[in-house]
Image (cartoon, rainbow, N blue to C red):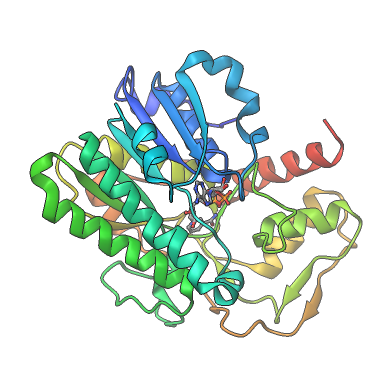
Length: 338
Ligand SMILES: NC(=O)c1ccc[n+]([C@@H]2O[C@H](COP(=O)([O-])OP(=O)(O)OC[C@H]3O[C@@H](n4cnc5c(N)ncnc54)[C@H](O)[C@@H]3O)[C@@H](O)[C@H]2O)c1
């Protein structure tokens, strides 16, 4: 499914190594797992299926053979986590509950999974001699500051329990690398900006905007936009997030919990997005229906990519338009039952 030839970009850096991908049955985690398997690694997927689906890795399960091990379990279960991490050189910690509004409704549950769960992963990684933990952080850490682009040196301004959990996760990453580096543990946090692509769940009540638009358009309905649609986002195709994770994992100097933006570095308005998707699906007449602004929505988001470019040699590998075409096509095939 990946557009990328990961071998060309990452050579044999992962060949024969073992990685744990928490949340590997989810959207981003399943793409990461697939890339690692293509690169010759053995992958342990730990996922409790509260948000993911085994269908996300069914397409490559056969190809992977015994190099893919799936453990259905929770990051909150210490013995399960210890089993999953044993023998792993890298941990890609993607497991979490997403959705800002749901986190507002269930702050304690979110804290348990996204914050305590993250500490469980770090503790198990330390005990197992893991070389580096990559953490799925979030651009929600920037809060509602209007300053653009968002630079990692800006203060954290978490405005929801979800954003607070994710920011705390970053703090844990930095603390564990600095406190327990002697055991060989290193960490990095990757602040994802609006990741999209095939396998992103369109059925959740909290579906990301591209998934929600695809679902509406394919059902012959007008996509709903909250506000005037002139809000913009740094929409980032999932292969770019995978690439950033792989670069961080194989970086040859300590990263000590450094926080990196992961994005495309391009701003697209929600109106432009809706028009592009309607065009691609051959339904330009399905113009958006505008509803009231959602309180707390940030007007614009755009990442500064200087740090990740300089430190890890990252640059986006799939442009927004190309990624959108692949994604729309995937939703079309799913809707057609292909
Ligand atoms: N998609 C984005 O735009 C975006 C942006 C910023 C950060 N993130 C972060 O990236 C990560 C992956 O996001 P995604 O979009 O792939 O979401 P996703 O929901 O598809 O994947 C998360 C996975 O974690 C699993 N999970 C949840 N709780 C678990 C638990 N207690 N134990 C084990 N597994 C558990 C779910 O079943 C799911 O498969 C998350 O940490 C998310 O917060 C995503």
